[in-house]
Length: 509
Image (cartoon, rainbow, N blue to C red; front, side):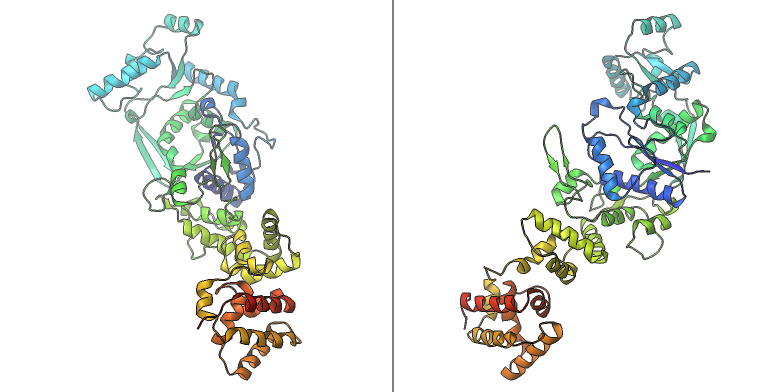
């Protein structure tokens, strides 16, 4: 069997990180088994359609390195891959269901539907829904005569097509992750399959498309599990039971406290993104930040998402895309919700940043510096990256950590200076500068020798000279190793900064 899976988002807004995880698991599964991964845009809900959302979805997946084999922008044997361009296909199958007695026309007005729900709530007869019991009291082709139905259709009376759910039957869904799930049909309602606007609902369209596109496995979020019995019925009613794909319903992504589904509101409240890319709402103009714009590496974002719900069965946490493909299996996806930890997300980015080739990080840092209007020699940047990247989680933080490399300090940490810049410090600094001026080798080994000799000659410890030297070079009491800073800046700049600090800093007793 040739594996074929699909990711089928609706262009109703930005792609949530949970949606990206669904796409990722589909992609990993397909690549693991040498199959095909399809991107299908399910845009039948025209009322909720958001301009720009489809392009956003595609750009987000591409940023993550999730490439599809067939889709709206890639021709394939089952195109088109936008549901809005497949309307007539769904109409034909809706008619097939009507003709076979598995679906029916419903002409109910909004007022009649509301009256039905109110009545059932008062009578407390189960769920107030349109189902195998309540449909017999409604305005549909099951309660009207054939002549009345034909007259309504001829008069173009608005209608929807509903599935005819069987009464009191156990509908079984076999799920790769959750095992056997059985639901009594009395709990199901007669879902609308075809709307009055001439478009199918998700339920009909996704089943028809999955069949026609030869999808072998439907890997989707847990929120679709309640709809799975309906989809099983549709496969049966359309005569496709043997071709029905295997289902795998993924666990939810949970808030950091583990209580409830992760939402944009959680991200806004706690200061982390929930979308892969920045999103500007076309109606309100509201901007929501993305992982890309926050400085996350795509490989780190993919790594953290993969482990939110899937366990490789080992202690390994760091994965490349190739390693994820080799290790992934649906059998190791859990049933329980996966709690998102923003700090762990930063940890993943830190780890991937350390493993990234120096040249690639250099290129990214040069972009950041250019955006900030900082002009600096590429060779200097190549030296900054290995010196500082262990101290940061994001490339943009390198610019902040390396500020001393671009410009001599104009302000000094007064609290630190008060503790460390003593009466004898300027004299020691002046003598050290003279010693450094005569140094033959301005490298780590040479500087080690100069500093040790200087301390021996003046009978002082490192605590008397190193804090003042660091303050002179970076303006603060923290940073990388002082000798590495000196090598980075070079002899002339080091001496210039020492003399500037002598002139600028007041001494303390």
